[in-house]
Length: 163
Image (tube, rainbow, N blue to C red; front, side, top):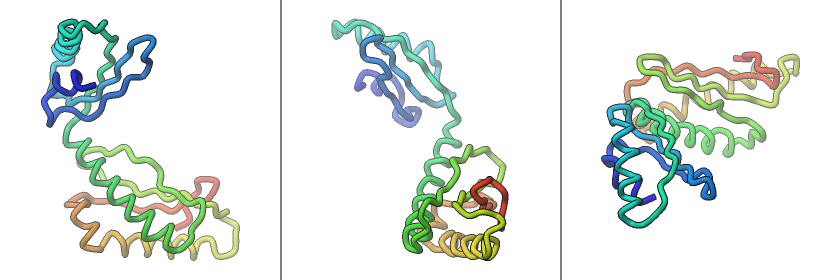
């Protein structure tokens, strides 16, 4: 793994994992500004120098800004989870995984165990939305949001919006 990280500039390296030790497969995630063929060759040259059999290297390239934004928003989601779900005992609630897109609002989609026809479901959905808004306005969380716009959606068990 050290060889893989050494072959990629620190700011361009996102993750690496050996998927299959027996088949010798390495999955690498790097910035889209890097030359993937050059990196594959560099890693395998370094392995040969150390007397290690080469690996099949799968490289996924991603935009550095998007990766950084996703990391920031993962911090935000952690705060929402702790300060809204855990604190209020909302069991089985979760935040849908986002796919951050530049210049698009981040969607904060919260999945609940509620049924749309349950008495008080819409009111609880609105209450949760206000609690999430409260967390997003704290100084601890605003620093992670930066200037990103966002939209909050609260969904019932059947993926119908209830707020």
